[in-house]
Image 1 (cartoon, rainbow, N blue to C red):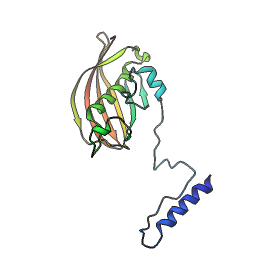
Image 2: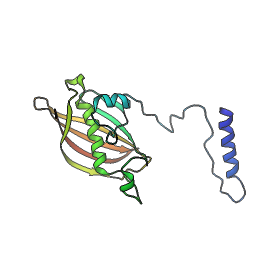
Image 3: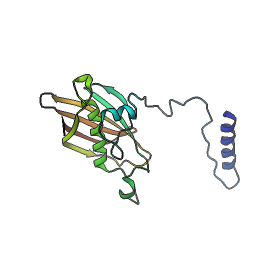
Length: 188
């Protein structure tokens, strides 16, 4: 396998060095994971575990995995944004970007993972958006981006099943969306 991989890189490098072509240096092939170049996100909760907690399903389940989880405190979830997402054909055909309302929904779903966990006295009930405040969209999210969403519980009124959360979403180190979320648990 390493021979085929090295041969492919040699072929590509050779074709880039042909007369009339600009030569670009490619990274040297390596069989080890280049952790410093491509940091891995550890999976704490996979899609199957998320589906056991959240009631959402395709096409509205917007969290692919959880990379950090502190019961009743915070969670960090990931949405891998691809051109195959069903919202791109209409938003916008010439310049596809993820709709802001879906970024907010994805963040709320991460918040739901914090609220619905039995470890903190939560239940497997439904949760509802009760409101959002101070939402700001800082940069567009496009196909190929990895949306990393952190939701932190600010205040919980357990008696009433109401929670206030702070959310921030990033692509790389860029803050792309932030806001305050009010959520409620209950049955439908």
